[in-house]
Amino acid sequence: MLAFGTARIRRRPNLTPMIDVVFLLLVFFMLASRFGHEGTITLMGAGQGADYSGPPRLIEFAPGSVALNGITMSPEALLPALTALMAAPDDVVVLRAQGGASLQDLVAITGVLRAAGLTRLVLVE
Image 1 (cartoon, rainbow, N blue to C red):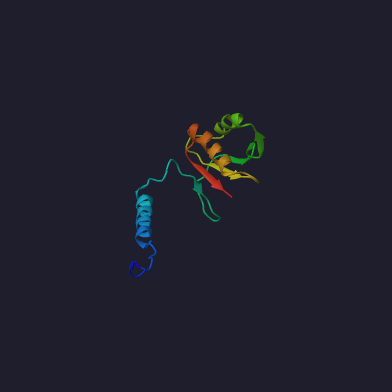
Image 2: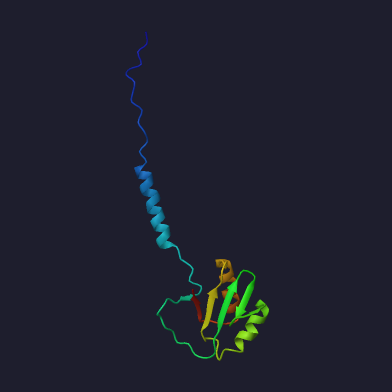
């Protein structure tokens, strides 16, 4: 008869070193990556004040509609109507989302305003 020796107990692979490497890579890429800082939108909370002068410049946006100071208009008519209310491009423009507005609507309206040279956009609830 053939004797093959005693049966060895099968070892389970140790995943601890692999988990450590994955964690270190995750931390490295989080610290080494550059997060986009294209522009900032100021978020105003209750009780916070800001320097605001001139006529009101409130843009309310919802899916498929844009209103300036409560007057609904097309996106193409927004910029001429808004520039008539501004003394300089660095005047404050207040943005407020209406029911059902998505983040894409915010990105679209801020893209149009930034392309026109407006720099001080304030997002309110």
